[in-house]
Amino acid sequence: MNITSNRQEEHLKKIYNKMANEAIPKSKIFQDCLKAFFVGGLICDIGQFILNVSIKLGFSQEEVMNIVPIIMIFLGALLTGTGIYTKLAQFGGAGTVVPITGFSNAVVSPAIEFKKEGFIFGVAAKMFTIAGPVLVYGISASVIIGIIYYIGMLM
Image (tube, rainbow, N blue to C red; front, side, top):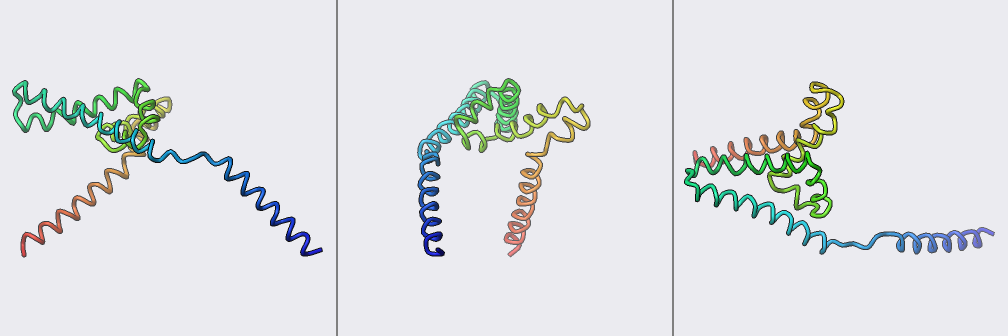
């Protein structure tokens, strides 16, 4: 009786595993990587276009290095507020996370989501829930690298 129940159990496991494997969606990693590459590249091309136009308009190098991030952050916030960035992220995946517009999206999205809770406890309190750790670890890493660089320069 024990052997029969073990065989039945093994048979049921095989049937379950077969059904589970058929239900798992097929990986589209190559397609997803191409989409991310395309969307991230497009965002970077827009930034490069803004940089080129700013230089053609006669702005100094220092001014251009301020203009480009400001416009890119504004565009990311604007597209997030209008719902376009969400559709872009659904298509391009990780391609929308890497550029500076992804950071803008990470700040604006929670602010929009929690605005109904008021300015203080909604927008202000939740605005950096996603972007906060990025800032903390980014600043911490830059301080550590700066210290290592400084010590290296002393030697």
